[in-house]
Amino acid sequence: MPQVQDFPTGIGSIDGWGLGAGASKVAAVGTNDGDTSYIFSASNGANQRYTFANLPSDADSPVTSCKFGAVMRQVAGTPTGYIFNGTLNMSIGAVFSSYTFYEVNSDSLVKTTINGFESGVALTGLAGREVNCTLVYRITNYTVTPPPAVPSASGGFIAFFSVLLPLLGVGATFMQFRRAVRDAFPATRFAGWELQCMWSDWLVWTRPHSVGMTRPYSVSVWS
Image (cartoon, rainbow, N blue to C red; front, side):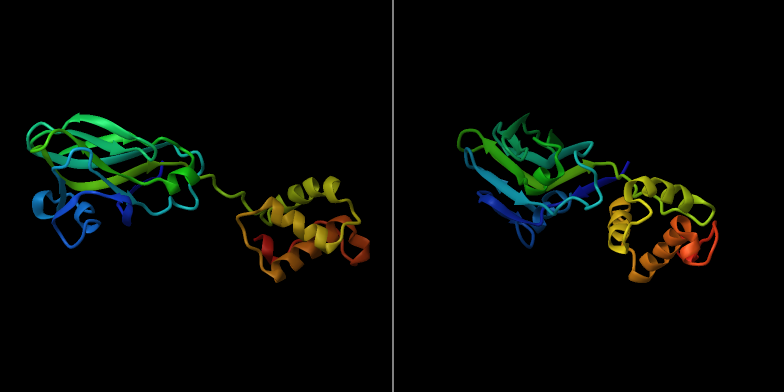
């Protein structure tokens, strides 16, 4: 099963934490490198949101699973941490004194919805409670539906034409035939010459006497 792990691509709708170390607040949470690069907060209720890239275009929807995560540590006091699941801040409980992975489930498994989700971290606690965050990420498992196989010269085109025949009829025009082929294979982009070759095969299959040939016949597009 394909899996993709993404890291923030930009600052989201809330920018409430400070940069502790690193080139920027986006870069600081793109690697799990401890205090080499991190963001921090000591403010009660402070939020930091990030945006992410879209999921792969070939991923089926809904996806199998999606989690938002962060690697954080407590610096002072006993703060409670939160991770934004795309809709709500979800509590992860008390933040430990050493860097620890924390994760929450995405609020949706619909691909287009996840593509629009932000995520990030939040902190609650009285003044003097502080947290560092060195990594923010999204990890998604998904399936991919393979495109239908193009019929082969071994006879697959005969089965394919046999399916089209009752739908189109022997009097189908080239435009009707082209539309039916493209509907049958939406993931395949056929060149004009390929469609013309298929059309020639179709004519041989449905109206062999009109083109002076007999069945079975095939051209290289099916090989």
